[in-house]
Image 1: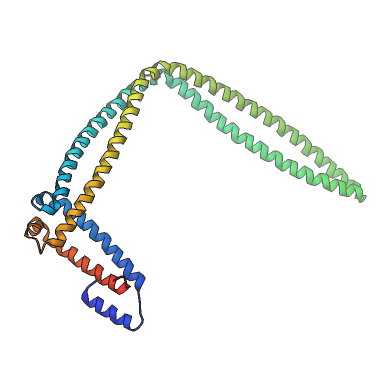
Image 2: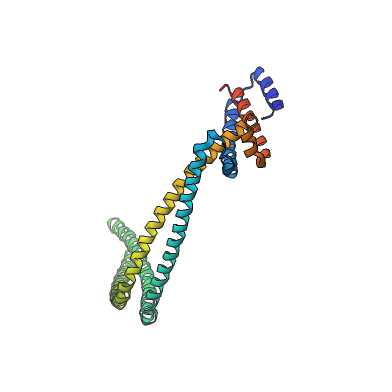
Length: 289
């Protein structure tokens, strides 16, 4: 916020126009930008503040953390390289069974494909049977009403004939459903047999590959631990960068050492100064000051 905008906003407040929530939101957004700018400035100039006594703790902590981070990054690279080699070894071991097992896989896929068709057919039969049963129940109810009310003999005969046909159709569908279900059961038995055969043929290779798998698991756990440590160090470093950037940007005019350290980023310093001024004005307009 500029002085001119502050002036007009102040006039608007005198006329009863308050925009407190907007001012607070603007101040919060600007504060976020300021914190990012402080961290960015600190990251760029941290190695120039060795002679600033007030930042001695931050400077030497950063040097220690950077050394620790470099060591962790190097160790992480080595473990990632070992992980890649372990994956290659495991892949080579498992792929060595591709040829003898290919026929088993193709047989299994063919059976699975056939069973998918059988499952669809079974569902169709069940739906057809439900439709037949629904129609049968409706006609059966109609027959009861006609019989009770002494309906026409021809109509009663027609309904009975239709009911008999539906009953025969339902029986045929039931027989077909049983046949399809038996085929599905037989297919599942074949798949179980193929799976067992597949497992037997691959047992030796899996045994050889288990060591590589164990190494992969251990390496992954180590990598996760290292990444967690790196994230913790990055958080600490970012905090120290922010402290350095905040101190230098606030004291650049009063402390020649700060001015010298911030010299490569004078433009950023001016932006940060404008942000602080704008935050102050927004706070004043929102009634926080």
